[in-house]
Length: 389
Ligand SMILES: Cc1ncc(COP(=O)(O)O)c(C=O)c1O
Image 1: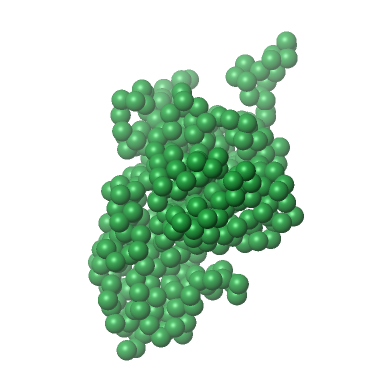
Image 2: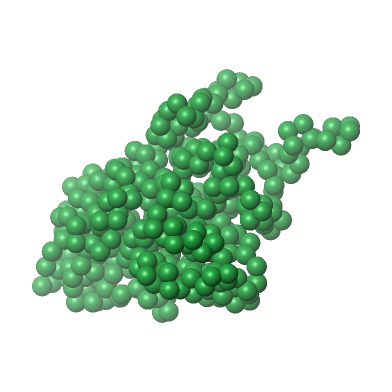
């Protein structure tokens, strides 16, 4: 199918619309082979040697994700799947050089923050956390000639702070700084960071892209196949960070329903946020779709068709009542992670551990695709039981 002709939504639904060349089957085959036959002259028919470097099932999912992110393959955009979102994120950091200065969103997924705190120093990286939702702070933190990467997560876990991607990219590029955006939460359905100038896009494909809570995977995409991209690909191949073909196959299947799931989760999240905003048992509802969220205006400009399926609530009275609410839910599932078909609730600080900067009264909600009324009734009942006024 000519990718220029149809929307990303159609490309997703049709899994790129390519029938298997051997069988004509519309569902792609899984290619499990770890190695590829060498010709008598030493060449490889398809250029593939070993699955740790290249695999046709992964390539199919990679081409689909690149198309969804709107990167034009003919302009050099490319995608590489990884064994997890963390493998993808750390591949970017590990492709930098000792002494490089890196600016990272102050509010971000704790796993990335923890990895940076534990390993960046031994890796020789000079990591600085900054409020990327404050452009003056970003401008002040950039060290011309030394800053090599600006890492932005938006909306950012678990406060859902919003960074203006176009403005941050303009600032960074003026100083020669590469910008990587963790687009896990917005997904290409709502935000396509390349269109704002991002150089790299990173995903935990474990979340919305797969969407069914049964695959661990990640991805890095580049706007250009430059030497830095070659280092990331080389890292994946030589460090062995490639996912298995079955995971890649499940991922492409999950992406076929991405638009439906993300739109539904976003609509329900907005409904829940609107319904519980001002609830007497809560001190705050954090959701970029609410007009009083500090990042709302930028989110309304930057996110198309919804504000995402993630929100947090802060329970009046602190950690005790918050844990009581958690214990009282019956429809929401108490579990970590996000972006699946079922709604999840989590005491985020409890998951992150004692060094977590997340307030103790905060519960993180990942909204799934269930009937919104069931979720609202469940939360209402849990708040009634858990947080007496
Ligand atoms: C925003 C974000 N980025 C990266 C990751 C890491 O992904 P994974 O768990 O697939 O390694 C997560 C996981 O929760 C995440 O929420």
